[in-house]
Image 1 (cartoon, rainbow, N blue to C red):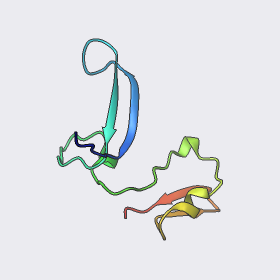
Image 2: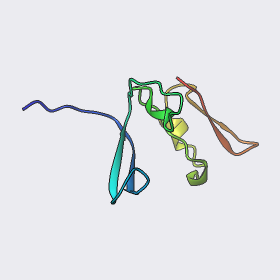
Image 3: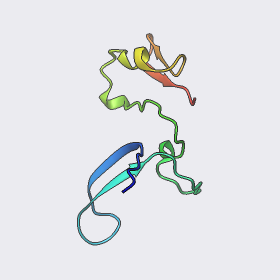
Length: 86
């Protein structure tokens, strides 16, 4: 039996919008499709990169420390993260 690995970037529980019943949807990185109506563009690239959620950020700046050089910057005056597409 071959074991495969994939990068998961999101898990949505209680998805009810795609038909009858409850389901859990798992989103993987590296989608080969380029749909014009794509609702998850962060999943197109297969590269690992930090995901920034503004409403969850506590401005500790640890993500800057662990990210690749110039991948994330912190604007002290605006107190926001700036994510670069690397």
